Structure formats: structure tokens, C-alpha cells
Length: 382
Image 1 (tube, rainbow, N blue to C red):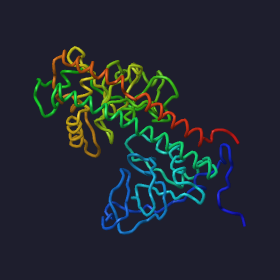
Image 2: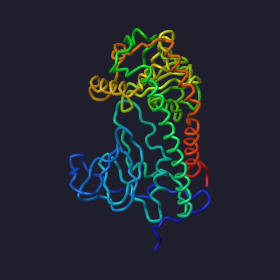
Image 3: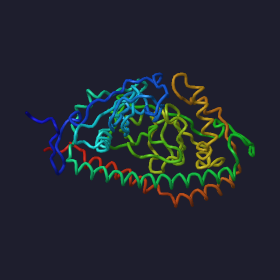
Image 4: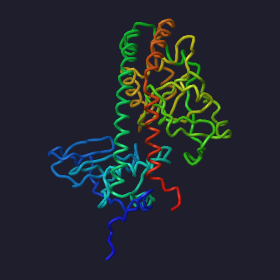
């Protein structure tokens, strides 16, 4: 009788379907079913959501968010745990390392291609048919070890970045005070301070309409608190960009996410992206540089107290999801410290930036992407 156990091929690995390497585990729990009456963990899209006296999956497995925010995101789960129905548990087949399966699933970018207001869904019956690479157990272990090493270095770099960010935030409070709770300086509305407040749109066709090069289109996934993430930067052509001329980016613009799960995240526009555009989830906040420096405004937005203010405001304004409207932005106020003090702060931040490991973090993330492509790509022919 023919064995159902996967047959391994060295070098680049054998091309197989994902459903040859894993099967569907149990994932039928609802949040209200989580009784918190036992030692076994239950996970949802955001992480641990509670415990139960029983468990659904007895072996280590991979969980994939199958609908809503974060769709396609994969995480590793330990044995004797359960996941909510918004997740799909994938049980590794015999001879398949759980962490190898995790990186393989991540390499598929299952969450790509979703845009608009509809709730995205992905199903194992569909993505289980996708072609993937199968390596021998020894090669699986080597691949897992490589990614573990990269992830450890990424963790260290992020910790160093967090320490530098804390230093900047402390210096900001020392120089300017809390931008929400204190009144050291006169306050001014963003409508009075800014020469531009506005968001753009997604070209018709969503992701399918994006180009591999051309004019950058910044999306909410690119905007993080205090830094810009260039990974997955989208591009549009001249015709598409012409329709978004009213949201052309300028050097010194502050970017603010105004809808969805990433609402309130803010960063400075990298100089090399001037001339690009933004979609409807990102607002350009362009302040008068003779009154406020963009770096100072971004530090106000990313301060702990102003983040709380923005998040609270977004929940009041959004009926079904977090949102900050243009009218909301125009009426928001910020402190206006003397320009001379702002320049001193900007000089301090510039010195801190020289110590940042952001370049190393970007390099490590890029390396992770390259390694995923190297190990798991099925684009070549056998």
C-alpha cells in the first residue's frame, strides 16, 4: 500500500500542496464559550483571550486569522490549547516541524489582496491547494534555526529602538510638558496651524491596480508610531496619481492614520517619498514650518497622552469602526511652544537618530523576506 507520509526531496525541496503538509484542527469556539475555568489557554486574533478546563488541539500547531482585521496572520500555538472561530488551526502532518509550517504559511502572504470596507475571509479549502516547498526534516530544522536567529536579532534591535524612543519622549515632556494635561503654552487648532489636512483614496481595483514601480502610494500599513515601514509600499502610475493630485506629499509632511485598527499611528514622511500620494486611511498633516516643526508635531501626536486622546476620539467618532474625520482633525488643538525651543528639541532628536538601529532592523526584516523567498518560492520550474 502506498504510504501517505510526505516524501522528501533535498536541494530546493519538493513542490507540493499546503494541504499535504497539514490538516484542519478544531477552531469552533466563540468568545462567550471561553469560561476561564481551567488551565488550558484559548487564543484569538489578538493573542490570549482566556482559559478553559478542556482543550481542542492536543499537539503544537499553527493558527491563521481567517477573517477580519489581521486576516492571514499566522502564529505558533502550543499543545493542549484552543483557538476561537476567527482562527484556523493547522495541524502539522507527520514529519513536518510546527515552526517550519509557521514560516511556510507566512511566506504565502495570505492576507494580501484585501481592501475596502468588506470583511475579508480566507478558507483552508482554498489556500490549502496553494503550491509550497517541502524539505527534509533535517533541512526543516536548519531553516527554522535560521529564522530563529534572525528573529532574536530583530527582537534586540526593537528593544534598542524602544529605549531610544523612550529617551526622546522623556526629553519632549521635560522641554514641553504633557501636550494634553498641561498648559505651559498657548494652544492652537490644527486648522489654524496646518496648510494641509486631508486623505486620499485607493485606485479602482484595489491591490490588483497597483504597479511594481511608479509613484508611491502610502497606506496605513506603512505608517507606524515614530517610523515609516517601507515594506509592502504600493505604487501607482501617472494616470492614477493624477486623480490624487490633491494629496501629493511634500517634504516635512506628518502622516496620521485615521481609520481602522491602526488609527492614530503617526510618523514623518521620509524625504525620498515626497511627490507620492496617500490613500483614504492616511491623512497628510502639513504644518506651517514657521510656527511648528514637523518633528515636534509628530512627537505631540505620538506622545502617550495624545495617543490616548486620539484613540478615544476615534471611538466616539466612528460608528462601526475607529475613525478620525477631517472635521475632527481641524478642531483638535495642540500646544504651540516657542520656535527656538522647538529647534533645540529637533537637534536633540537628530543626535538620537544617529544612534538608531532602524537601518539594522530594516536590513533584518528584508533578510527575513529574502530567506522566505529563497526557501519557499515555487516560482521556478522543476
